[in-house]
Length: 506
Image (cartoon, rainbow, N blue to C red; front, top):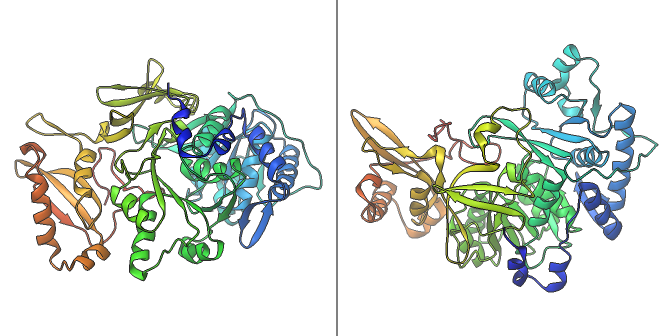
């Protein structure tokens, strides 16, 4: 079992001692309102809501839910884009003792209807801009309460204090098998995941956060939004990613939660325009949800920004480990957080712990995901002598060669990320004729290559790949290089989109 005292040296004692446990989201939220009532909690579309003002909106929305027959123990769908309406509804659902099923805004009407049936929803809260996605429900289940996030009440309903083991949130995930399913996160898991996000950072309370990741993604919800509220910080909601850097210049955040693709974009623009596109107030970037290149750690340090990689899963309420020693160990995802039990079986990381989900929602795939009570992550890992964790691959993406040798694409990709000018890369296999070949697709870093005076990309990357090939056993050598002139297809969370067998989606 890990111990969070290992993170104590990365901040002062007063700050470290303020990172405490809560039994539910109600406890956590009320603590923040009590200590930060007049401080800004959310800024959305130019309007600022203090903690006290947002709390009043939440109390009124609890009355709305009650008037529609929603009660403790019910499961309620939430279909809305990033907005203060989403946050208000999410916290109202949880603080009334119900559970929120987070439905991504891009779902179509038939899928929304299917989810309402699968999850046994007792109501659906939705943003008015997405009303057309409720039409099938209206036709087929006219008795299901449909509630817009704009509804309010002159009444208020007091919060309830759910048991820590009661269901809080259901979030969609591909899980370990690639099939979409709902991870069941208890209040215990959500608040512990939120707490874990506060460790390993020098200044964590009373910060200015910026939200660009989807609230329906565990990284955007727990590490970006709930961690902001836990720490009495303010949260600026970026409604349109095209306006991200203009909003950053106006709001001047001190901490960002990024996936690597967004961190790469901000870094490239900073290099292109000769200034820090994230602003001079930016101190810390938490980066995860996909492999983080050591290049990003080093380059952001030159801008005076600490970029900290981490590792987590939807099934673990996001946070399993965080790296407070990123410059010293830039290819590690850090130290395991308190409350996590772990072991490595045949190279794969297995987990138990306080912040783990209570299984998938009504899905028989639980039998595939667990063994003897341990959740099998599907991630291949190693630990160094200091206890730092490294991800070396995915079990489902292992390439089995005709020779019987096994190749981990992720472990190979790490080696090629070290080439100057590689922004992102992917290793997979193809069969040409009777020959099985390993292919490396490369997304180049245009700014770096231009600064180096590289004109012939094919020749440059062929030479650099051959240098690495010369250090590899014969079965791991790259046979073919593909230089991309456009980005990879990506998921809504900005990960490279792979097929179920690990190959590239076109």
